[in-house]
Image (cartoon, rainbow, N blue to C red; front, side, top):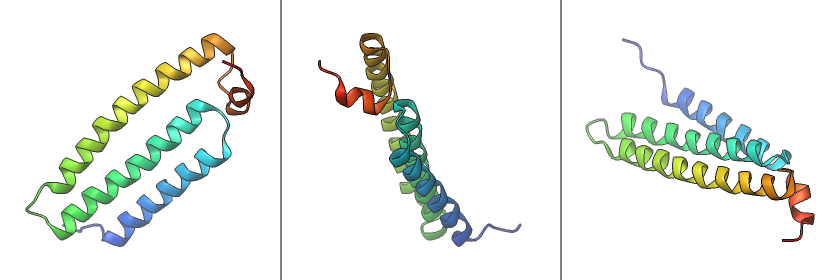
Length: 104
């Protein structure tokens, strides 16, 4: 069975991280920024699983860290979406530039 080299997995993870970072810094929509953060967290999960598989194949530390990050990301997404919905209800916009000009 052919295994995928670690460098290929790390390249994929790095590409996903920088795509997420680009989306976070260039977009002004809060939902798009939230999706970019989730993409960055998923690239970190890929790193944890890859290093766990190649460096410590008989241990499960990387998998447990990944499950912990997935749990934190789900909680973060739930709270962020609740905040975005409240912001939209009160100001009829989820644009970051509009949010900085709003008076609460």
